[in-house]
Image (cartoon, rainbow, N blue to C red; front, side):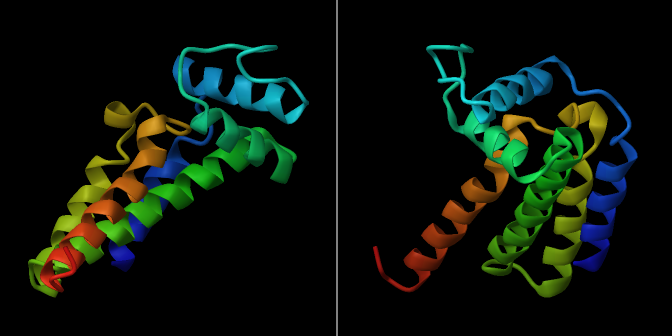
Length: 145
């Protein structure tokens, strides 16, 4: 598992000097305006649901430099996704198979050419979605459904 976390850190930190892609910058801009007091869909508008904008607004509130804050939060979400992915795999496979698969997941879910970098909705969705699968599988195995 440590190797998966190291892979994520290396892949994420290696792109911290690159600019955001168009979508990621748009989410950051709307989030920054909300953090300054703008009302979403009234003062500033985009076609996405509000979750990513509220997340970015909270990041702007917590971190003085939005780029580093967003990049840190994106990295944390990627690490959480890998940890939850490992927990899900352990419901079905051995430790060795789960670790090897999690390392591949960490690699392919964080390669810039596939993910377009930080502050993407898909990055923030992975951990909660995988956690839902984990809790569903666990409930089925424990006859709670």
